[in-house]
Image (cartoon, rainbow, N blue to C red; front, side, top):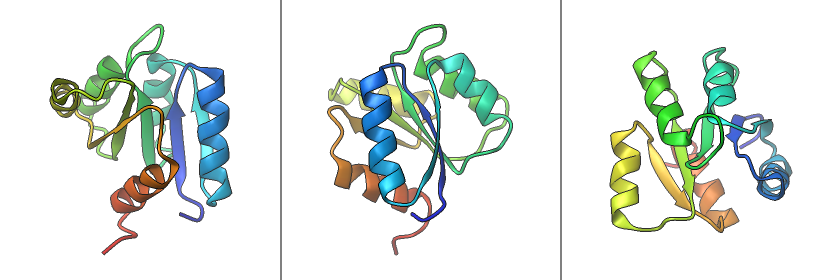
Amino acid sequence: MQDVRILLAEDAPDNQLLLTHILESRGAKVSVVGNGRAAVNSALKGDQDLILMDVQMPIMGGHEAAHELRKKGYRGPIVALTAHAMLEEREKSHHYGYNDFLTKPIDSEKLILTIKQHMGELH
């Protein structure tokens, strides 16, 4: 995961700190935004390899942001972060354009494994 550039779209400061620590301790470079609108604006600049997107955020939610990114041609991996583990939520996330889905509280090893899979580091 060395030097993988990750955009973390998360509005909760505690989650921002925790996820940033987990990711940076594995060598990732993390940029943090606190809402979906900022995530869309940042992602369209192309400065990241992968987006971790909280589903529920102010200004613009994660579903809306992921959907807008896909409509505007963004092709990179987007991973949903949500407290809702129901099958319907997983299906909804794929409908909006997410590539994958992680539930909160985040399991750090599953987080790292998911990122590596999307970055092609696992065979």
